[in-house]
Amino acid sequence: MKMSEVEIGKVYVARVSGLLVPVRLDEEINRPHRQGRWFNAINLRSGRTIHISAAKCRKEVSPKKLKEYLALLAEDR
Image (cartoon, rainbow, N blue to C red; front, side, top):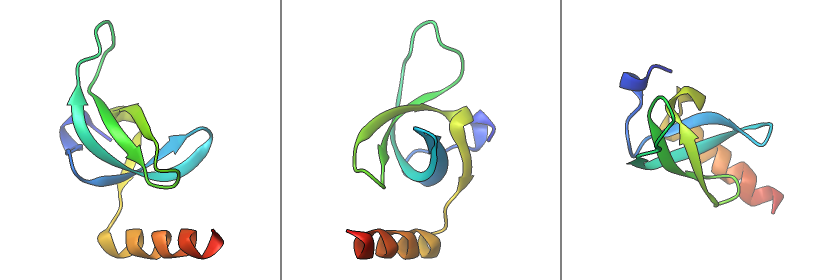
């Protein structure tokens, strides 16, 4: 996605450790010597905090799809 399209607080699909997972962007961070916008985000599959660039965000996840995905994760655990 373009840097201007990414918003804090929304959930996006991103590739993390080789898997496409939903991530929620929490805050923008300053990464010296790096181009683009960088964020602290939560990997909603594992619950871990990650650093991610706006370029890694593929598309926004609707609240309905997110609810379905989280229900499937709860069944697997």
